[in-house]
Image (cartoon, rainbow, N blue to C red; front, side, top):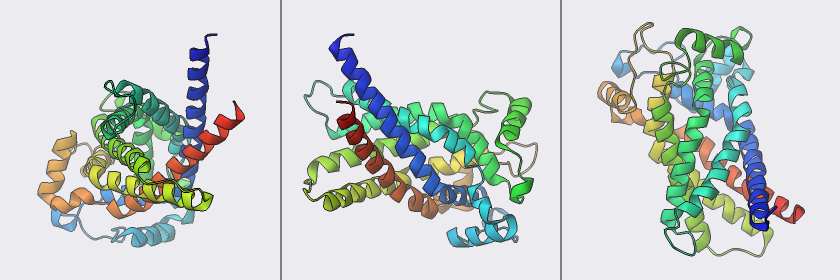
Length: 305
């Protein structure tokens, strides 16, 4: 085997291993906040005609309290199986494709620029979105279910129901694909672009604790900025993939059309529903992923030399 090909495969294997590890750790720790974010995004504001029922959530902690009381403590892990099943290959694909897109977007430069990192992140996000959208559709359906844990259908039952009723296409298992592409593409463009650009500017520390905190800090800001910018796409995605307000009638169809409906009926601020739990998840979650990736990659690089 040629040495160049052997080195490429070695690096690809390390990127897959480190990316998969990062995704698995992040989803196990942060899933409850993702569920709370989805619940907040799915509920319409009273201004749009929704009544403040017992299950109307007034914020992150109110949502957690009401869910634990009405649905059980473990309801905070509803819909975790789809992301657990997909996060390892999803993050592996994200980091692997980011490294490959990075080579493509050098534009003749001998080293990556902030534009390189941002465009590579955008490409990785789009690729990731196409892979994970069916899992996102199932996850949102499960997260929207307000029954007690024992009464919630299984992941496989929900998947079969969606396929039987609507098929695999853009009205079925791949509903909300453009919104997922927008959400993941924008997030990763900012996430990778900011992290790698700033990491190259802020000096490294020789002390391992200080160096760890440096990476965590940059990763936290990267995840936070990405979350703030991409959340309108996330709200549109939740509305498209979640239960429609009137059964049998599709109100939320397209990405920008759904954004327009939400802004018109509930106010522009409604496009930022779920921002608090999203930042609470993807701020530290973004730091966790990038730091775990860096350290696992360094470990594998030393182990397989």
